[in-house]
Length: 132
Image (tube, rainbow, N blue to C red; front, side, top):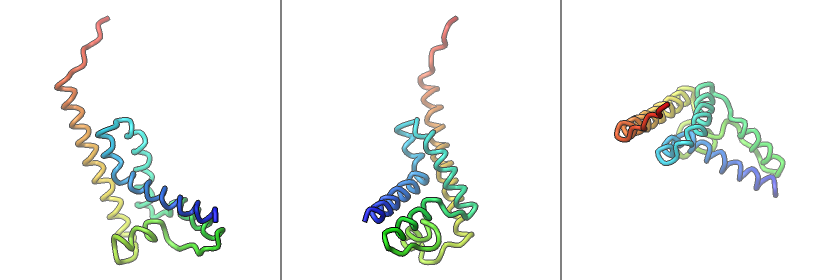
């Protein structure tokens, strides 16, 4: 029983990780410090997509499911949980490249907007220079 609960919790965490990788930059408009957490998560997600790797959370979930008596699954998290919802076809390398490119492009646009907002604020409210 505990293995199944852990596997289910891991799925929720994995999904939250994916959502944060995709849209975490949007949180930086509210909390600037989130950039330091989001950029490593984004880098990992992009590396996984571009290299066709299986995230280490997927084999861990499968091991927990096997320990609880359930069957695991083949492929990766995105292929097993998200693609059946988003795409009717199986995950291909071209689709992984497309997803990875979309991930980079979306976050680049968000970070560009965030940078432009910050520089505009700095122009409107310049900091006084320290005198020595």
